[in-house]
Image (cartoon, rainbow, N blue to C red; front, side):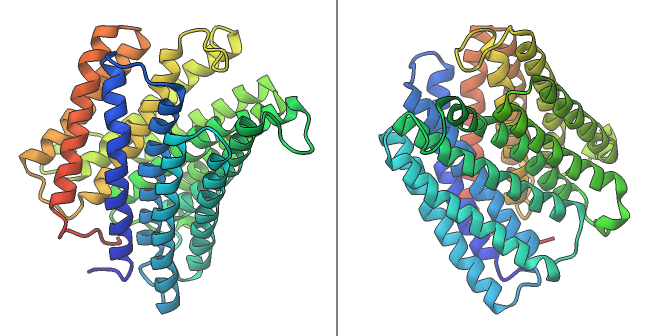
Length: 398
Protein backbone atom coordinates (compact mmCIF):
# COMPACT_ATOMS: atom_id res chain seq x y z
CA UNK A 1 0.00 0.00 0.00
CA UNK A 2 1.30 3.43 -0.96
CA UNK A 3 1.63 6.12 1.66
CA UNK A 4 0.58 9.74 1.24
CA UNK A 5 4.21 10.90 1.41
CA UNK A 6 5.67 8.34 -1.01
CA UNK A 7 5.99 10.89 -3.81
CA UNK A 8 7.79 13.34 -1.51
CA UNK A 9 10.17 10.61 -0.36
CA UNK A 10 10.78 9.65 -3.98
CA UNK A 11 11.62 13.28 -4.83
CA UNK A 12 14.24 13.25 -2.09
CA UNK A 13 15.67 9.87 -3.12
CA UNK A 14 15.91 10.73 -6.82
CA UNK A 15 17.45 14.16 -6.16
CA UNK A 16 19.91 12.59 -3.74
CA UNK A 17 20.95 9.95 -6.26
CA UNK A 18 21.74 12.63 -8.85
CA UNK A 19 23.81 14.66 -6.37
CA UNK A 20 25.60 11.46 -5.34
CA UNK A 21 27.15 11.40 -8.82
CA UNK A 22 29.25 14.43 -7.84
CA UNK A 23 30.73 12.52 -4.92
CA UNK A 24 31.35 9.42 -7.03
CA UNK A 25 33.13 11.18 -9.91
CA UNK A 26 35.47 13.08 -7.56
CA UNK A 27 36.09 9.86 -5.63
CA UNK A 28 36.98 7.82 -8.73
CA UNK A 29 39.45 10.41 -10.02
CA UNK A 30 41.03 10.84 -6.60
CA UNK A 31 41.15 7.08 -5.98
CA UNK A 32 42.95 6.50 -9.28
CA UNK A 33 45.56 9.08 -8.24
CA UNK A 34 45.23 10.74 -11.66
CA UNK A 35 43.92 13.96 -10.12
CA UNK A 36 44.80 15.52 -6.79
CA UNK A 37 41.68 17.51 -5.91
CA UNK A 38 41.98 20.73 -3.97
CA UNK A 39 40.75 20.89 -0.40
CA UNK A 40 37.69 22.70 -1.74
CA UNK A 41 36.88 19.76 -4.04
CA UNK A 42 37.53 17.25 -1.25
CA UNK A 43 35.04 19.09 0.94
CA UNK A 44 32.59 19.13 -1.97
CA UNK A 45 33.08 15.36 -2.29
CA UNK A 46 32.41 14.90 1.43
CA UNK A 47 29.42 17.22 1.71
CA UNK A 48 27.75 16.15 -1.53
CA UNK A 49 27.91 12.66 -0.05
CA UNK A 50 27.05 13.36 3.59
CA UNK A 51 24.29 15.92 3.04
CA UNK A 52 23.49 15.73 -0.67
CA UNK A 53 23.13 11.96 -0.80
CA UNK A 54 22.86 10.60 2.73
CA UNK A 55 20.98 13.28 4.65
CA UNK A 56 18.50 14.03 1.88
CA UNK A 57 17.75 10.30 1.70
CA UNK A 58 17.58 9.92 5.49
CA UNK A 59 14.93 12.63 5.59
CA UNK A 60 13.11 10.69 2.87
CA UNK A 61 13.20 7.59 5.07
CA UNK A 62 11.94 9.67 8.01
CA UNK A 63 8.94 10.73 5.90
CA UNK A 64 8.19 7.06 5.23
CA UNK A 65 8.69 5.98 8.83
CA UNK A 66 6.60 8.75 10.35
CA UNK A 67 4.18 9.50 7.51
CA UNK A 68 2.05 6.36 7.38
CA UNK A 69 -0.72 7.87 9.55
CA UNK A 70 -0.11 11.51 8.67
CA UNK A 71 -3.16 13.76 8.38
CA UNK A 72 -3.66 16.22 5.51
CA UNK A 73 -1.82 19.04 7.26
CA UNK A 74 1.18 16.82 8.00
CA UNK A 75 1.23 15.56 4.40
CA UNK A 76 1.24 19.12 3.05
CA UNK A 77 3.98 20.11 5.49
CA UNK A 78 6.01 17.00 4.60
CA UNK A 79 5.67 17.78 0.90
CA UNK A 80 6.90 21.35 1.40
CA UNK A 81 9.68 20.02 3.63
CA UNK A 82 10.91 17.70 0.87
CA UNK A 83 10.97 20.56 -1.64
CA UNK A 84 12.81 22.83 0.80
CA UNK A 85 15.40 20.16 1.58
CA UNK A 86 16.13 19.65 -2.12
CA UNK A 87 16.53 23.39 -2.72
CA UNK A 88 18.71 23.96 0.35
CA UNK A 89 20.91 20.96 -0.43
CA UNK A 90 21.54 21.95 -4.05
CA UNK A 91 22.54 25.45 -2.93
CA UNK A 92 24.73 23.96 -0.20
CA UNK A 93 26.67 21.70 -2.58
CA UNK A 94 27.11 24.54 -5.09
CA UNK A 95 28.44 26.77 -2.30
CA UNK A 96 31.07 24.21 -1.33
CA UNK A 97 32.11 23.66 -4.95
CA UNK A 98 32.44 27.32 -5.87
CA UNK A 99 33.56 29.30 -2.83
CA UNK A 100 35.31 29.23 0.52
CA UNK A 101 33.79 32.49 1.72
CA UNK A 102 30.70 33.60 3.57
CA UNK A 103 28.34 31.89 1.09
CA UNK A 104 29.17 28.59 2.79
CA UNK A 105 27.83 29.48 6.25
CA UNK A 106 24.83 31.19 4.59
CA UNK A 107 24.03 28.01 2.66
CA UNK A 108 24.80 26.02 5.79
CA UNK A 109 22.29 28.08 7.76
CA UNK A 110 19.60 27.36 5.15
CA UNK A 111 20.51 23.67 5.32
CA UNK A 112 20.33 23.81 9.11
CA UNK A 113 16.87 25.37 8.87
CA UNK A 114 15.72 22.52 6.63
CA UNK A 115 17.17 19.94 9.04
CA UNK A 116 15.47 21.58 12.02
CA UNK A 117 12.21 21.58 10.06
CA UNK A 118 12.61 17.84 9.44
CA UNK A 119 13.23 17.25 13.14
CA UNK A 120 10.19 19.32 14.14
CA UNK A 121 8.04 17.47 11.60
CA UNK A 122 9.13 14.09 12.98
CA UNK A 123 8.52 15.19 16.57
CA UNK A 124 5.06 16.34 15.54
CA UNK A 125 4.27 12.91 14.08
CA UNK A 126 5.32 10.90 17.13
CA UNK A 127 1.79 10.76 18.56
CA UNK A 128 0.40 9.04 15.44
CA UNK A 129 3.43 6.83 14.69
CA UNK A 130 4.01 3.48 16.42
CA UNK A 131 7.11 3.75 18.60
CA UNK A 132 9.58 1.11 17.44
CA UNK A 133 13.35 0.86 17.77
CA UNK A 134 13.89 2.13 14.19
CA UNK A 135 11.60 5.16 14.70
CA UNK A 136 13.25 6.02 18.03
CA UNK A 137 16.66 5.59 16.41
CA UNK A 138 15.66 7.85 13.52
CA UNK A 139 14.48 10.58 15.91
CA UNK A 140 17.75 10.43 17.86
CA UNK A 141 19.74 10.42 14.61
CA UNK A 142 17.97 13.60 13.48
CA UNK A 143 18.76 15.24 16.84
CA UNK A 144 22.42 14.28 16.38
CA UNK A 145 22.28 15.59 12.81
CA UNK A 146 20.94 18.92 14.06
CA UNK A 147 23.78 19.20 16.58
CA UNK A 148 26.29 18.39 13.84
CA UNK A 149 24.69 20.93 11.51
CA UNK A 150 24.94 23.68 14.14
CA UNK A 151 28.62 22.86 14.60
CA UNK A 152 28.99 22.84 10.81
CA UNK A 153 27.64 26.38 10.53
CA UNK A 154 30.10 27.45 13.25
CA UNK A 155 32.90 25.74 11.32
CA UNK A 156 31.88 27.59 8.16
CA UNK A 157 31.92 30.92 9.97
CA UNK A 158 35.28 30.09 11.54
CA UNK A 159 36.80 29.24 8.14
CA UNK A 160 35.31 32.33 6.49
CA UNK A 161 36.27 34.82 9.22
CA UNK A 162 39.03 33.11 11.18
CA UNK A 163 37.06 33.63 14.39
CA UNK A 164 33.64 33.37 16.01
CA UNK A 165 32.02 36.44 17.61
CA UNK A 166 32.37 36.52 21.39
CA UNK A 167 34.68 33.50 21.60
CA UNK A 168 38.43 33.24 21.95
CA UNK A 169 40.37 31.48 19.20
CA UNK A 170 40.84 28.22 21.11
CA UNK A 171 37.15 27.86 22.02
CA UNK A 172 36.05 28.79 18.50
CA UNK A 173 38.47 26.27 17.01
CA UNK A 174 37.28 23.52 19.36
CA UNK A 175 33.60 24.13 18.53
CA UNK A 176 34.33 24.16 14.82
CA UNK A 177 36.54 21.08 15.06
CA UNK A 178 33.77 19.06 16.73
CA UNK A 179 31.71 19.09 13.52
CA UNK A 180 33.29 16.05 11.79
CA UNK A 181 33.00 13.65 14.76
CA UNK A 182 29.45 14.89 15.43
CA UNK A 183 28.41 13.97 11.90
CA UNK A 184 30.38 10.74 11.62
CA UNK A 185 29.92 9.17 15.03
CA UNK A 186 26.89 10.91 16.46
CA UNK A 187 24.77 10.89 13.31
CA UNK A 188 25.87 8.38 10.66
CA UNK A 189 26.30 5.37 12.94
CA UNK A 190 22.91 5.90 14.56
CA UNK A 191 21.17 6.55 11.24
CA UNK A 192 22.74 3.43 9.73
CA UNK A 193 21.54 1.31 12.65
CA UNK A 194 18.01 2.76 12.47
CA UNK A 195 17.57 2.36 8.71
CA UNK A 196 19.12 -1.11 8.46
CA UNK A 197 16.97 -2.45 11.31
CA UNK A 198 13.89 -0.87 9.72
CA UNK A 199 14.72 -2.70 6.50
CA UNK A 200 15.36 -6.09 8.05
CA UNK A 201 12.83 -6.26 10.88
CA UNK A 202 9.54 -6.65 9.03
CA UNK A 203 7.38 -6.75 12.15
CA UNK A 204 8.97 -4.57 14.84
CA UNK A 205 7.31 -4.60 18.22
CA UNK A 206 6.86 -1.62 20.54
CA UNK A 207 10.13 0.00 21.54
CA UNK A 208 9.13 -0.23 25.20
CA UNK A 209 9.28 -4.03 24.96
CA UNK A 210 12.85 -4.12 23.67
CA UNK A 211 15.37 -3.21 26.37
CA UNK A 212 18.26 -4.30 24.15
CA UNK A 213 17.05 -2.13 21.28
CA UNK A 214 16.63 0.92 23.50
CA UNK A 215 20.08 0.27 24.96
CA UNK A 216 21.51 0.33 21.44
CA UNK A 217 19.93 3.55 20.19
CA UNK A 218 20.23 5.54 23.41
CA UNK A 219 23.74 4.21 24.01
CA UNK A 220 24.87 5.30 20.54
CA UNK A 221 23.17 8.66 21.00
CA UNK A 222 24.91 9.20 24.35
CA UNK A 223 28.22 8.11 22.86
CA UNK A 224 27.85 10.71 20.12
CA UNK A 225 27.14 13.43 22.68
CA UNK A 226 30.20 12.40 24.71
CA UNK A 227 32.38 12.55 21.60
CA UNK A 228 31.10 16.10 20.99
CA UNK A 229 31.91 17.17 24.55
CA UNK A 230 35.30 15.44 24.43
CA UNK A 231 36.40 17.27 21.29
CA UNK A 232 34.96 20.64 22.34
CA UNK A 233 36.46 20.50 25.85
CA UNK A 234 39.58 18.57 24.76
CA UNK A 235 39.04 15.76 27.29
CA UNK A 236 41.06 12.85 25.96
CA UNK A 237 39.83 10.34 28.55
CA UNK A 238 36.22 11.03 27.54
CA UNK A 239 37.00 9.99 23.97
CA UNK A 240 37.90 6.51 25.21
CA UNK A 241 34.73 6.31 27.34
CA UNK A 242 32.62 7.34 24.35
CA UNK A 243 34.39 4.74 22.19
CA UNK A 244 33.62 2.03 24.73
CA UNK A 245 29.92 2.98 24.72
CA UNK A 246 29.92 2.90 20.92
CA UNK A 247 31.43 -0.58 20.87
CA UNK A 248 28.97 -1.89 23.47
CA UNK A 249 26.04 -0.48 21.50
CA UNK A 250 27.17 -2.04 18.24
CA UNK A 251 27.90 -5.42 19.83
CA UNK A 252 24.34 -5.49 21.19
CA UNK A 253 23.06 -4.39 17.78
CA UNK A 254 24.92 -7.26 16.09
CA UNK A 255 23.44 -9.71 18.59
CA UNK A 256 19.98 -8.35 17.77
CA UNK A 257 20.67 -8.74 14.04
CA UNK A 258 22.38 -12.13 14.29
CA UNK A 259 19.43 -13.94 12.71
CA UNK A 260 19.96 -11.93 9.52
CA UNK A 261 23.70 -12.64 9.35
CA UNK A 262 23.64 -16.43 8.99
CA UNK A 263 24.46 -17.98 5.57
CA UNK A 264 20.95 -19.43 5.28
CA UNK A 265 19.43 -15.94 5.10
CA UNK A 266 21.01 -15.33 1.69
CA UNK A 267 18.73 -17.82 -0.06
CA UNK A 268 16.12 -15.80 -1.92
CA UNK A 269 17.11 -12.72 0.04
CA UNK A 270 16.22 -10.03 -2.49
CA UNK A 271 16.98 -6.38 -1.77
CA UNK A 272 17.46 -7.15 1.94
CA UNK A 273 21.03 -7.95 0.88
CA UNK A 274 21.71 -4.22 1.09
CA UNK A 275 20.44 -4.13 4.68
CA UNK A 276 22.62 -7.06 5.69
CA UNK A 277 25.71 -5.49 4.14
CA UNK A 278 24.90 -2.29 6.01
CA UNK A 279 24.93 -4.20 9.30
CA UNK A 280 28.27 -5.79 8.41
CA UNK A 281 29.87 -2.45 7.59
CA UNK A 282 28.52 -0.80 10.71
CA UNK A 283 30.63 -3.36 12.58
CA UNK A 284 33.62 -2.74 10.31
CA UNK A 285 33.27 1.01 10.83
CA UNK A 286 33.25 0.73 14.61
CA UNK A 287 36.29 -1.56 14.54
CA UNK A 288 38.09 1.09 12.51
CA UNK A 289 36.86 3.77 14.93
CA UNK A 290 38.50 1.94 17.82
CA UNK A 291 41.74 1.80 15.82
CA UNK A 292 41.51 5.52 14.94
CA UNK A 293 40.91 6.46 18.59
CA UNK A 294 43.92 4.45 19.74
CA UNK A 295 46.13 6.09 17.11
CA UNK A 296 44.82 9.52 18.11
CA UNK A 297 45.26 8.98 21.85
CA UNK A 298 48.78 7.61 21.37
CA UNK A 299 49.74 10.64 19.29
CA UNK A 300 50.42 8.61 16.15
CA UNK A 301 47.57 10.28 14.23
CA UNK A 302 46.74 13.98 14.11
CA UNK A 303 43.85 14.71 11.70
CA UNK A 304 44.37 18.47 11.98
CA UNK A 305 48.00 18.46 10.83
CA UNK A 306 47.70 15.41 8.57
CA UNK A 307 50.44 13.57 10.41
CA UNK A 308 50.21 9.80 10.80
CA UNK A 309 48.31 7.05 8.94
CA UNK A 310 45.45 9.15 7.53
CA UNK A 311 44.40 6.18 5.40
CA UNK A 312 42.89 4.57 8.50
CA UNK A 313 40.76 7.66 9.16
CA UNK A 314 39.62 7.78 5.52
CA UNK A 315 38.80 4.07 5.70
CA UNK A 316 36.62 4.71 8.76
CA UNK A 317 34.81 7.49 6.88
CA UNK A 318 34.08 5.30 3.88
CA UNK A 319 33.05 2.29 5.96
CA UNK A 320 30.24 4.50 7.28
CA UNK A 321 29.52 6.60 4.16
CA UNK A 322 29.37 3.72 1.69
CA UNK A 323 29.28 0.55 3.76
CA UNK A 324 26.74 1.46 6.42
CA UNK A 325 24.69 4.30 4.95
CA UNK A 326 24.74 3.80 1.19
CA UNK A 327 23.91 0.11 1.55
CA UNK A 328 21.02 0.93 3.88
CA UNK A 329 19.67 3.67 1.63
CA UNK A 330 20.06 1.60 -1.54
CA UNK A 331 18.05 -1.04 0.29
CA UNK A 332 15.23 1.43 0.91
CA UNK A 333 15.12 2.58 -2.72
CA UNK A 334 15.30 -1.02 -4.00
CA UNK A 335 12.54 -2.52 -1.86
CA UNK A 336 9.97 -2.65 -4.68
CA UNK A 337 12.41 -3.53 -7.43
CA UNK A 338 13.11 -6.98 -8.80
CA UNK A 339 16.30 -8.46 -7.36
CA UNK A 340 17.73 -9.44 -10.74
CA UNK A 341 21.20 -9.76 -12.20
CA UNK A 342 21.80 -6.02 -12.34
CA UNK A 343 20.83 -5.66 -8.69
CA UNK A 344 23.22 -8.45 -7.71
CA UNK A 345 25.99 -6.69 -9.62
CA UNK A 346 25.31 -3.55 -7.60
CA UNK A 347 25.34 -5.38 -4.25
CA UNK A 348 28.49 -7.36 -4.85
CA UNK A 349 30.25 -4.77 -7.01
CA UNK A 350 29.90 -2.11 -4.34
CA UNK A 351 30.67 -4.25 -1.32
CA UNK A 352 33.56 -6.37 -2.59
CA UNK A 353 35.30 -3.33 -4.07
CA UNK A 354 34.63 -1.35 -0.88
CA UNK A 355 36.32 -4.09 1.14
CA UNK A 356 39.33 -3.86 -1.17
CA UNK A 357 39.33 -0.07 -0.95
CA UNK A 358 39.36 -0.16 2.86
CA UNK A 359 42.21 -2.69 2.85
CA UNK A 360 44.15 -0.47 0.45
CA UNK A 361 43.68 2.55 2.69
CA UNK A 362 44.58 0.80 5.94
CA UNK A 363 47.56 -1.01 4.40
CA UNK A 364 48.60 2.12 2.47
CA UNK A 365 48.61 0.11 -0.77
CA UNK A 366 48.24 2.44 -3.75
CA UNK A 367 47.60 -0.34 -6.27
CA UNK A 368 44.79 -1.93 -4.25
CA UNK A 369 43.17 1.47 -3.81
CA UNK A 370 43.58 2.35 -7.49
CA UNK A 371 41.91 -0.89 -8.58
CA UNK A 372 39.11 -0.83 -6.02
CA UNK A 373 38.06 2.83 -6.23
CA UNK A 374 36.92 2.86 -9.89
CA UNK A 375 35.19 -0.51 -9.57
CA UNK A 376 33.30 0.75 -6.52
CA UNK A 377 32.43 3.99 -8.30
CA UNK A 378 31.14 2.21 -11.39
CA UNK A 379 29.07 -0.18 -9.26
CA UNK A 380 27.55 2.79 -7.44
CA UNK A 381 26.78 4.44 -10.78
CA UNK A 382 25.13 1.24 -11.97
CA UNK A 383 22.97 1.33 -8.86
CA UNK A 384 21.98 4.92 -9.56
CA UNK A 385 21.12 4.01 -13.16
CA UNK A 386 18.97 1.07 -12.04
CA UNK A 387 17.12 3.07 -9.41
CA UNK A 388 16.47 6.09 -11.64
CA UNK A 389 15.37 4.15 -14.71
CA UNK A 390 13.00 1.96 -12.72
CA UNK A 391 11.20 5.03 -11.47
CA UNK A 392 7.70 3.56 -11.29
CA UNK A 393 8.69 1.51 -8.25
CA UNK A 394 8.05 4.07 -5.54
CA UNK A 395 9.14 3.40 -1.95
CA UNK A 396 6.48 2.66 0.61
CA UNK A 397 6.29 2.77 4.36
CA UNK A 398 6.56 -0.38 6.40
